[in-house]
Length: 195
Image (cartoon, rainbow, N blue to C red):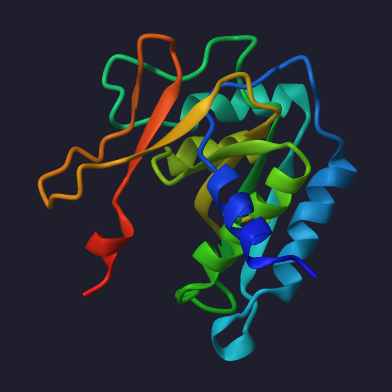
């Protein structure tokens, strides 16, 4: 059984990474294992309406990449350069023939996948800002599957540091890069979270 402290450390390591070692592929079987984790997540009405398009082929990754928007706080950055791009993606879709509303299943399943990936040393970014038309065309998605999120994945080629804010409501919570190129993620302190 995992201890509370081990689980807390896993959550702390489960960060958004945006630069990867593109020379290290992720096997399709590893991606299938990550999707398999979603079977054990709670599901509203137990409907289980989410499906995943696995993208691990280099050509498909290249077709999908232009559809994605990277890091909204980095106004002058269009995403990772060649050599630092994701080597795989999981495109989370809702089966609209089952329902149009997955309730909170999307977030629960993405957290399960990213936690599982962290255990394997794989990290990524959950992307909501994307061009749906380009995603559909790049992956030849059947009409009934509506893309909700794109999870980029790879072995990290950057360092991510958590940093406590000053605890005020006006604290700057925007992630940024420091002078050494590390990705700094401000987090509000516990006392600010509890009412």
